[in-house]
Length: 127
Image 1: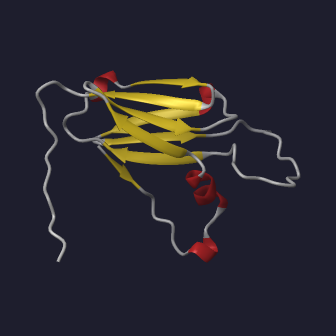
Image 2: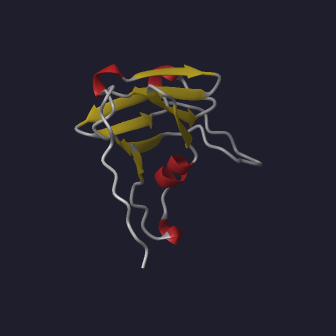
Image 3: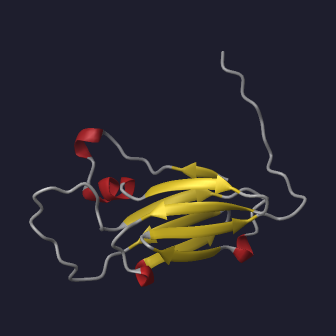
């Protein structure tokens, strides 16, 4: 499993979508039977998360509800706005049994591994 980052263009012209996209921090760890993806998204509404698997790509996104209040911020270090993150899943992930739960501001996505299947690996030599 590996992370696929969206193209951002040049830093001076980034729009709000890409900035909020970066605000949904992700940690991934591996257990004996799964990969666990922890997406840190405090202040969201769980019914507005969307998870889709198309081919070998998992997309996790969030769309805030219409009319969501936008205060005049004095200090703003995180966003509660929309985001979209994509992850490529290799053949060892059981795509039919992916589960997700949103608890205490963290979306936890469990990506179970198929027993006996190993991910293809290739070491690349740096010249």
